[in-house]
Length: 58
Ligand code: SF4
Ligand code: SF4
Image 1 (cartoon, helix red, strand yellow):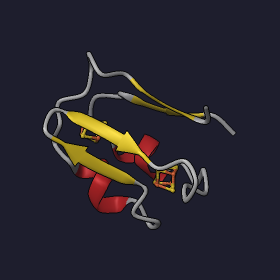
Image 2 (tube, rainbow, N blue to C red):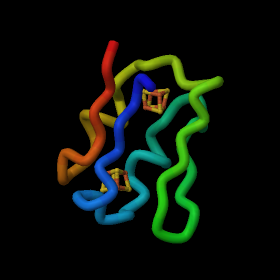
Image 3 (cartoon, protein in one colour):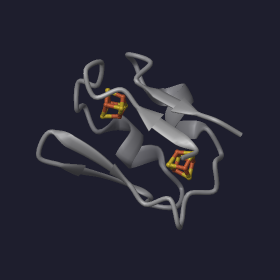
Image 4 (cartoon, protein in one colour):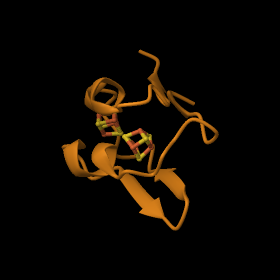
């Protein structure tokens, strides 16, 4: 698992979904889904998250 989303910290603002260049993130009700098969581990979602809920591990 290269991406960790802290579901207790996440405010479901959708910012990470909008910035992901690969469309790997999807907001499903109150859940962020990650499609790891398309994620390129660029870390943009990690940097945009206002509450630090995403951790991308290279
Ligand atoms: S690391 Fe990059 S490609 Fe992967 S989910 Fe985040 S923004 Fe999308
Ligand atoms: S940017 Fe952060 S707080 Fe907003 S939906 Fe993504 S993980 Fe949740």
